[in-house]
Length: 353
Image (cartoon, rainbow, N blue to C red; front, side, top):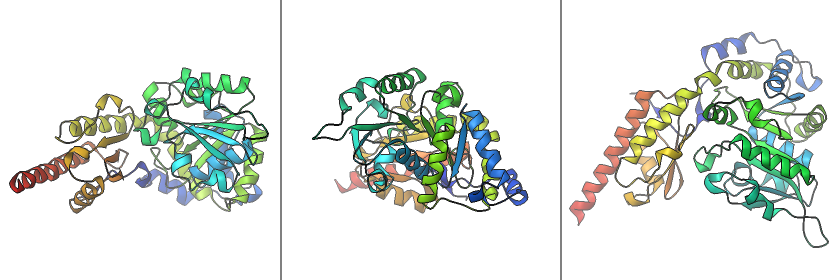
């Protein structure tokens, strides 16, 4: 029986069309800006996001921190949601590389509005750091793929800009957000000063992300990319897959969202699991397993024994992520295995009592 891998949408494998494009890619030295396939990817990404320029980077983390480095200077603060990826899962790079302090704010379901952000703004004084940047995340990963609406994001940008503060978007899964909202990524991100999006998650490319913004911003980000070790040579082999992902994959994201709903509704019916399916808007399902009496990491271990892969993100919570390499049947099998594991645990507990 085949493996059902629900750990993340980063585990997707390149499609046959991506592999063909990679094999046939026209390449050059990208540090010299001579890789035609990379140049096409960057230009196409900028066009789709209605920006002046784009920059291909090896990872979303590098893209985020190139943006932070360009927008800020040492000794400033970056406002972000307390569950954000840049704060929790990027190795404190904003401090180590940019010399900035994260000023975390909690938003409902991981979504930050201006009313959440305004009290955290700091002016530079003789005693405290000033706010150098606001960073939003859409979708918000650890908040279960929550989606920030256009109007809310635009108000944050307008208010921040009125105070001279730039706004960056960690849009690793921005195409999922646009799919959920029924709009384009250009409409959803037009007021941000910079946007990073991933090709290697829901879009299914094997490697890479793109940072978009003004020409001046991208020129500065290119220098930071080199500083971070991201200057690449004949990388058009990877960019070719990214181009296929960018053109072909957004149209199939609704299938991932539908499969996530199947998982969410099924999990919510299993005794001991707490989950509101109505809050599952995209392809990420986060649920509470505390009432099962088993830590999430132990549940993940037992699932793995049955060829189902999922991640515990804390002792009480688990995450499952749908993507192109998990079909509806795989989701149903994951639910059956989960139900069997927890039913067996309930039986053992009852016998022991």
